[in-house]
Length: 239
Image (tube, rainbow, N blue to C red; front, side, top):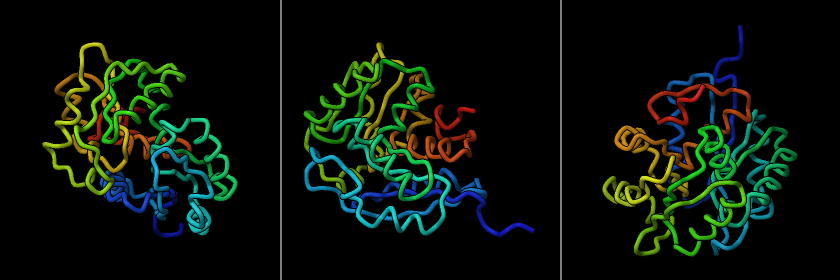
């Protein structure tokens, strides 16, 4: 008789101001009894311009390592504008520290777009327009053409982003659905856009890649336990 509890243990590093990561992920894997997800928190740098590296994460990766994981994810999107290459370096460091393959939300989104064969996107970002323009430049280097950008009129803090209701979230997303895009991407894992992905996909007929959903999708793949999970949109429905 096997050991009781989930056979696969996954670790997620969550920014301390993020209140979406655990609850959304728990909802997604609620009917996947073989998956156990374990979390630890860290404090983001004060400026969005600062890259996140192992120094920023501090003791968090080693605490996750104690749980003997099969995969690790950094639940943050800063690499989308500070550079995907930096996230690749971060993953190498996390793999060394945790003894398990690693991904980040930024890497996961890029991989998700490749899996969906989407190269022309509408970008939704709940932060400053200047940062969104940097995301556009970084994506161009990876063959992703950002056709349009939707950002809020007023810059919000991470907790304020988390407090947006359905009207606020969907209202921010809608302008990104233009005729010349084959996917919409929501960058910001504290933006609760994941709950509206399926409905908006049905309405507009194109995939929506939410960075928080993409994180768990790619984490399952790097951990070798990928499977379709219905009800959360086209990405998680992939075989």
